[in-house]
Image (cartoon, rainbow, N blue to C red; front, side, top):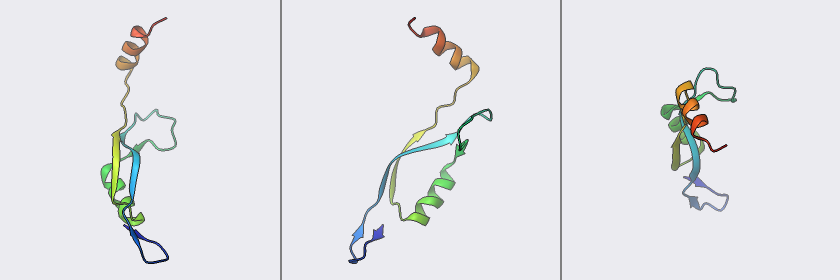
Length: 72
């Protein structure tokens, strides 16, 4: 919950958060964002609720299946 300059309290929802691990070979800026880290950041920033999504874990096997089943 955050309070504005007029003293009104506001319930804060982060509507899109990816949580989980990515493979070590990931080239994204953040390879993981675990629940404990998310909760710590929520508390520090006054966020009351999130809509969380599990980061997809891709392996060579799932990538092969995805490629093989894609229409050409």
